[in-house]
Image 1 (cartoon, rainbow, N blue to C red):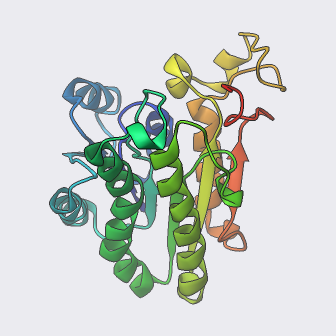
Image 2 (cartoon, rainbow, N blue to C red):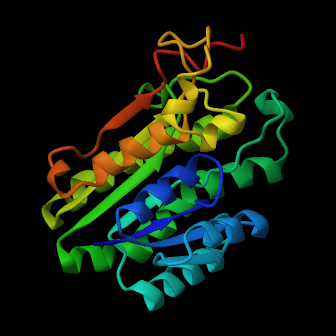
Length: 250
């Protein structure tokens, strides 16, 4: 079994990803920013698993360096890099109303953090001739779609699309793949819910009739991380249930 590093993997969309890797028997290092209670809850649920929790703010380079150092000291080189963390400004507002601090947070947390983590983990992947990199985007990111009132987040994620593809091309010869997953409108409890749970609740806004869940994202991540999924790299996958996420609030 391999070693997965999952940022912000103790709650939200990252929670099911973490659980899925643990249930498959992988060694897992998970970062959390501030919610220690959720981190400890995860540890209680998997007391016998190879799980290592590290507090880290992905907008801070030093925290990322410490995260990878602790991960490698605990479980060795990282095979699966899951860049789940992604700061988000929930207030809907136009670009001209963003503060410098908000802009910097969006770019540092959604784009710069991935750059730093790639620099810290790809060298060991090269040595083993194996690696899986998963980044997160938003529906429409692959076509550089504009997203009304989400300018900073959208700009960072569209930049991440190009980075995802570029590292895929550059590292293919080393057995490393890089792909992006674009979740749909998965909110509230559905972020940590199962597919079975969502099928019991009618969602008229989503064409398939149910809300997306954390399990939908986890299943996609695990598929792309499979050793036999090496033909899939530099790709962007919308996991939306057919919902046009970026235009639904206009």
